[in-house]
Image (cartoon, rainbow over all chains, first blue to last red):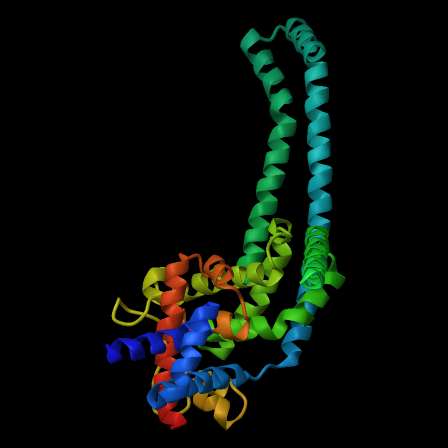
Length: 158
Length: 202
């Protein structure tokens, strides 16, 4: 029975630090500690261990802060410039898409007329039409892929 | 009581406003905000990384990388999280990637307590380790010597709880583990630390 009491006290000593205690638990522990030497010792050891932990101060080189701030500023500028570039790219991509849709019937007729005039087979001028239609998207895709590859390389180099 | 409620309310509002301002600044990649955050959190981040990796050089490398990641992923920060919770989560992910590259094994194996598989321990060579040397003063070095014997998963939660004063739920979010795991690591970590320090400070 007494063993159980001490066990509970030991558990509460740790719980006090880790989770905190309910009012009744705290009152019980305080009453127990007043009359129990070994548990008092245990509570003191726990407090001492935590005080020692809190007082352990790692050395820190402030030059690291300045170097990091400098690096962050450079990287922020890069990212802002990249974002602006990407925005311009997406806007031109959207415009080209809208223009492509609007101009598709005209372009089709133009390719058809050219095919007849130059006596080119239907398959060839249709392929030409398809290529001219997907060219902007292909260019944008290539630019994005190139930028991604460049960014990945830069990250790896760092 | 009512006054305390008002004070808490005001404090919460201020914290929320600050977190909102941080989120806006991070979305805009505001260099002045970044300077401020680095200045404000440098020591706490470094201490956390040092506790996690057990190596000063690695903590310094990861320190810089963490801020770069904060810059790149700033748009993902949500003001409902405390900034430091998010910062430590990012730092932790980077540290895990780094440790995996160094010791190609699973995260669980790396951070698990002893006896459950191979884990990352600070080498005991008899002379003061780099980890011990990373602390100021003789007493702190003794504490560091005791900490060096703890597995990183214990050191990590101990520092988040007793240095950073994070709530248990916040710690669980940072370490991406259930609350019960966090508690059990804290209890075991505290018990081990107490045992080690008992010898140092009898």
